[in-house]
Image 1 (cartoon, helix red, strand yellow):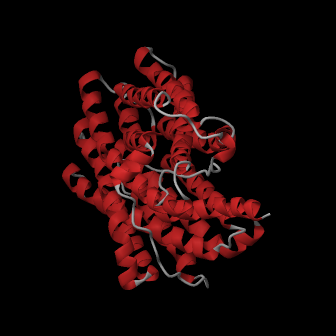
Image 2 (cartoon, one colour; image 1 turned 30 degrees about the vertical axis):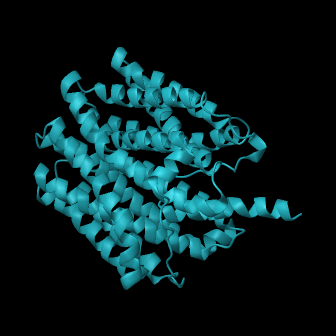
Length: 417
């Protein structure tokens, strides 16, 4: 662990600062949109635009890196993020915000791909798993810390947009000035979607549904909070609870995943998530209950992502796993684009608490599909499955490929003995 910190501290620190900037803008825009009088429908388009840009970035960044190199792409996208954060306050128009959100989603996607390839290159086979775990933890801590930052300024002014812009600019300084060499970049082409679906229908459908869940959580939680009149402090605590729940639940669920039929775990988690997130739509829940439900929501959705990736890999040859991961990320991105728009529509029809109803329905759909898939084929034996690897929903194909390599090393070593 100390070796990982010594070799990658600049990148890990920089990514935490970047996630503070990303977490602030994600929640702040929902609050500021309410202040500016934007409707729920208008804000749903704003929030969806981030995931559209993110999807474009995941497809275009590899070619950009091959043409001009890691350093230039990293610096250019970082400058774009810093500028867009300030531009939100300078141009409070929802249509302009849609364009800005596409740009910032594109830029963050590119930054993740670049940073993760850098981290992968700086790690050995022995330290890669630890490096990826630290990377995920720093990302989650950055988002959690960003919610506290919302309480130090007025969301109707410039300050809360300027501070994350500064943090993003500062984040790139230790990374670009570090002595680590930029790696050669290679990214596997994705497996065909037809082939991927035939390999794991549950993996494909589940990842698509989770895209809607993640984008609703990340994009529309602040819109819901503003609509029901939560203070900035209460809203920031609620959003933070989603990520705290996701961070805490990854490892115990991962432990269970390696010891049982993963489809049963997908079903159980999804069914539990459907019930828990449906509560605020049915009853007038207290604030404490809402925070608890937020933690449970994150504690279900984040591990489900890693669980579905692991389940899909159970049916693949090791040589196909990296290609499949790229395809799953694309499917997840397509699902994420529609999440905020559908959430905004149902909130406009049924009221703000339909935010929870939408997520409950998605979890319920995943539970039903997992139950049906259990009748279609037998599960692989637990001792024949690959290891569960904690992954953040923002992880690029580079990080997933590295995680697969890190988990494959001990398996290969066991076979050789």
